Image 1 (cartoon, rainbow, N blue to C red):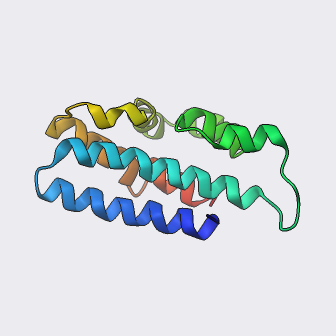
Image 2 (image 1 turned 90 degrees about the vertical axis):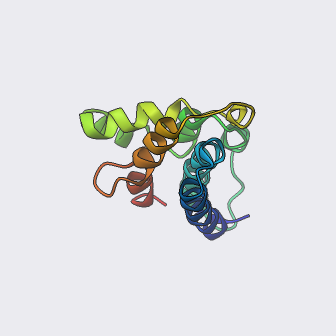
Image 3 (image 1 turned 45 degrees about the horizontal axis):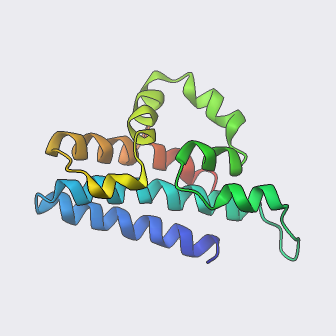
Length: 136
């Protein structure tokens, strides 16, 4: 997997989320929405890796997680995140997104929760994906 693979997968999963929402499959849409952000964050991490450099062990280990907040740190986006957090439009969306866990696959999610998650990642002005695309 490389940076472009993660970017492509994030965008592919976003299209799949839209298909699921259009077909009223809200639990699946919610679950895949989290993977959109996870893959986008992993693309950001991959961008930080220099060709032919051997990454430090901590970064490698911290990258193999589904915890979105830990991935923000592994992607070295903490400082920019602190700036973004001051924007209430962005931060309210982030709070929705960070609730996601890989365990979401075992839970039922309502239409409203799935749509809120989708809006939180997709909003063109303050969405979490919009922010990450500036760094991937």
